[in-house]
Length: 414
Image 1 (tube, rainbow, N blue to C red):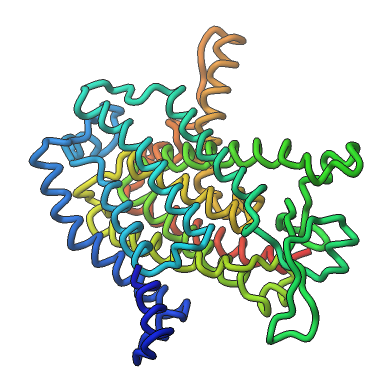
Image 2 (spheres, rainbow, N blue to C red):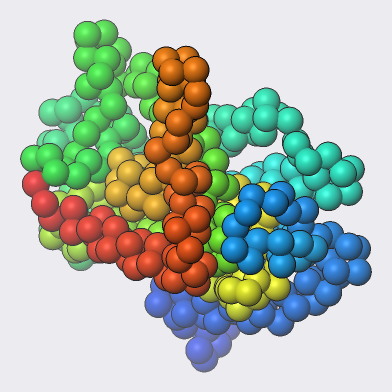
């Protein structure tokens, strides 16, 4: 809103200083400061409100060190994260940008699903929360919306030379000659995405149905949209599983968000995208603003969520964080980097799948279930080994930073 206000003031009244709001760097820095301030200042009030409402966490006794001391800690703190993302974004981002609209929708959508789950657990005293089929249905719904917008919306384009577009049979939306370049550039509809470690660093989903001939580009949604639905569902659930120690999911998400912010900046910059040989995605630089809001909200929430936590995010927060990360990676066409970038989420998810699968297998074979880990998800395995909770979280963060660096490096590895 402020962005549009100052844009109007500069255009009509030449107001001194109004032009600052045209700079991504200024708005990003302001977004981080504002989201941090909101989460710290209003976070305390929200925690107080949750305590008054007796919105406390019900803890199952799993014989973990310090676990029962967390009994009654306020939950549903994800409301702090959502508020700290949406307010700065609405004030500082270009609300006419389709990518910003999609990210705001993703935040609200997943926040509502998580809130419904927490509300049923806390106020209806039903430990199962929102039924699994409804939760999955909500995640599938978001994936469907993101997939449809990415595939059909005319503002979601990739910029390349007209020769390349015509050679590959891509639908050209428009052609123009940018002021800083001496050649025509085409804005095309395509299901191209960046893929690490391969020559050219690009993959077109339509290649999987090349057998359909000339219709492959039009029918690529058959592959693309189900994949988007899977990614949104998988990442949001994986983030939910990771939220088991104080500050673990929050800190890990902040690291991922910062990396996606870097990817948004280079993908939306003609010079950097050309140098890195990645897809140039017009208008995606605006997502740097959203990423800044996301980072500030996560770090601000850590003020109260770091060990010993004064508040838990609940599913309101964890499902929202996972949904945002998935949607942001998809719109930046970096979804195939998720196994690396979100490696902590992936490992936590895999540990549960391995544990459950091996237990069932050994029970059928030997009549007695056996375990690979002392407990799953993986962070509980290390708790069982009597490693202090803050040390486990800090080490997971370090691994997250390493994975983030590796994600950036893959842009140049062919």
